[in-house]
Amino acid sequence: MSEQRAGGVAEREILTTEDECGGCLSEGRKMMKNSNDHDEEEILRSYEQDEWISVQDSKKLREEYAACAHNTFKKNKRINIRISESDLNRLKAKSLEEGIPYQTLVSSLIHRYVTGKILS
Image (cartoon, rainbow, N blue to C red; front, side, top):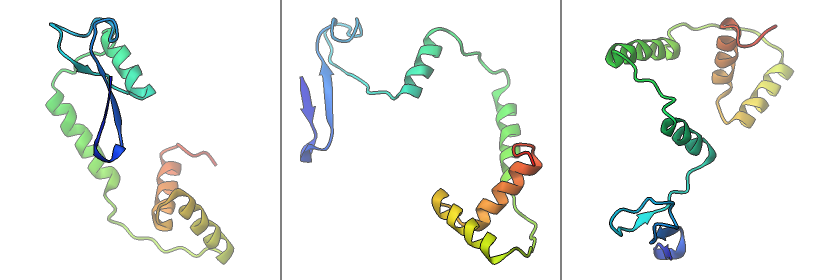
């Protein structure tokens, strides 16, 4: 059985028998069938196969990651450089392709280079 939202925007399939959902119904209740993408399906599969490990002291780990993220995005220094007009134009064109300001692209390139993610 299918159901449609007002305006006909999204359809959802409602599973009504145990056969249709692989035994997911309990006591005849209706259940919505999820339309997960590939990544979600992979996460679900790995979780169901007990491939996930609980993290001990998750509060401390979360604080460490938060500090790393804060320091990564903290931009408290300014630099001035001279580059050719043609390089600047190509840089601006690339930033338009990426959908980000060209200064952000330059900062990202520098960060990736100094952290070893871009080799010379």
